[in-house]
Amino acid sequence: MEPRSPREPPVVPEGASAEELRRLVEEDRGELDIPTLRLLLRHPYTDGEVIEAIVRRPRWLSAYELRRDLARHPKTPPVHALRFLGGLYWRDLVELSLDPRLKPTLRRRAEEHVVERLSGLSLGEKMALARRAGHGILHRLRHDGHRRVIGALLENPRLTQGVLMPLASHESTPPEILRQIAENPRWGVLYAVRLALSRNPRTPPVVACGLLSGLRKGDLRAVADNPRLDTQVRRRAALLLGDGASRTRRP
Image 1 (cartoon, one colour):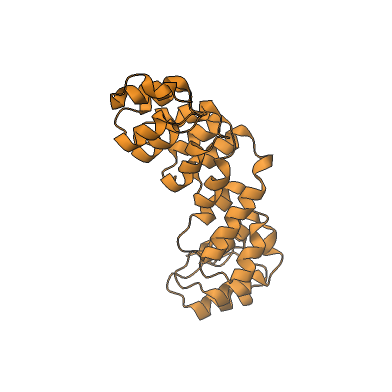
Image 2 (cartoon, rainbow, N blue to C red; image 1 turned 135 degrees about the vertical axis):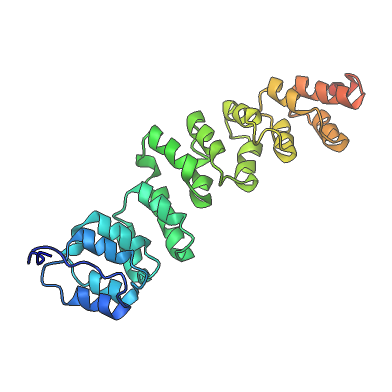
């Protein structure tokens, strides 16, 4: 076998201990390159001391990929991981925020960094984010107001009823967004969502009327008696109750 070239980076031994890995980093004389360091970070025995040894070499930290890998490593001391977050792309921050191996404080801070950049994202980026993000980001994206962003948000498997309900019930939500929620095959069939939409004065009347079938009598009564709702919606609720049109003549 030919001897290794002096300029060729050392191979990371598969069976190396944490102490051996730390010495490999500390004794480096310019042989370790970024791909080798990234491979080292995937070694099962890489611990906080090994990572501290890497972080002490500023010349390595100019590489984006290494900073990203360090921020996402479960053994990276929080003081360093938090320091690297600000320079990461939003897509990498989202992946970090969803990594269950990492401390909750780090994941929350990653979400906060993404939220801080929302105003600078394009429509396409917001849509991609809405399909993937976790709760902290979805809480902010639900107020975006663009129907394509909300459509992407409704596709997100991490979206919960608790995040969606304020959007369905609040009168500041645009009518086209309320229609979008009602027509969604996943969310438009849930009783609580149907009820919230039917009681929202901003829901288009034709949409609200279609939601009334199947509501409990008490909820139908509340709709029929609500003077803030469209007459068409109140009349439909009264008819379903068997009251005829008389309920809608109340002031």
